[in-house]
Image (cartoon, rainbow, N blue to C red; front, side):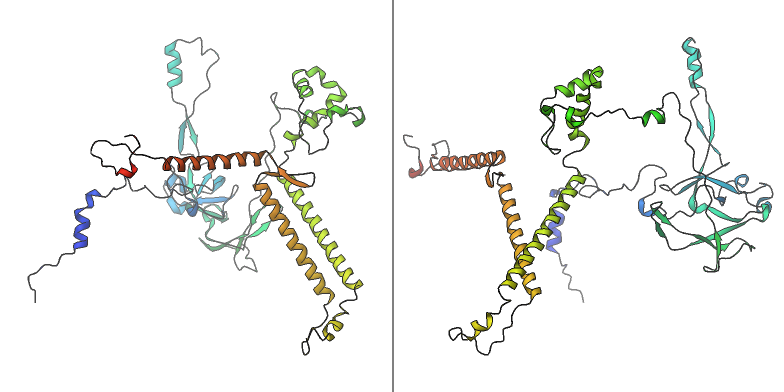
Length: 440
């Protein structure tokens, strides 16, 4: 039975009453993280998750189309399906949009600009405008969606058989071509066919088309000939003929600070025939030709350090085992246990084995390496450099020390300002006597 009293949710009423004070985003996309690939990117764009991962139709395949005008699908537009389907050759595929281009299917056109005549500049402005504004329609291929084409299994005119469903084998990575390869089969056909059936799969095998490799076009006057490219133009002199002042101390040394030879090589082409100059140029350009911090050099350096560390560990383990063997292999342990002051009667203690000694030595070596790396990391972070067997303050350390001193000085001045703070009496303000400025 209703009492006639209406229950009011105070919390909800408060939110409704104050909703006009809540800031709202200007649009629904505010505070939303944008994806790596936009959802919409023009007409025909297909998102990554909607793209076909494995194309079973490639260039050179023979297919039929299932959509479009009758004149494009059938051999005879009037008879329709009774005349059989047209079989097209795949000219190209676009895997980013799931589209297939077919040879002969050119029911689209584009206004392609025509080349200007030789006497275009001598024409009147009206003639030039008429030439540039006239249409030049050129037939172009129309893309067809991947799902609207079917592979031809047996081509026989009106009795051609097509694969209405495709099955594939498990993909296998081919190292020679650096891609996955697989075989395709017709799991279902449009009509019965006498094509041979694969014994292992139990379906009709559809071979991949053989596409001839494109031949390079003949070189033009603007191309460099192959014999010119392969011709050796750098003539290096013997190291003994190079002045000692031009040779850096090592291959990892920076380029010489004196760039006179480099400027001469660049600005005076006639001087490049000098043997000393030819031999010195690779040293001057070593930084550009082979960066010091390249990945290859870092990898080689890391490998060299790890190899040296492994050799040092093996040497430390060998020395520890040799020392343990020379000391008698813990033979003095029984004498220690028999000592009355030790009082280890009843305790089972056995001598160490060679494996245990080697493991203990390896662990001690690894701990020493870890502490050494920590020390190096600490000193490098502090701006020190290793020189003459010890860590000394480097340029970075001096800058860090100056920065630290500057921060301390700034903090100290801020504290002094707070300690010396004194308020002056102004209008509508009451200051206690103990914090008033002296002399106010």
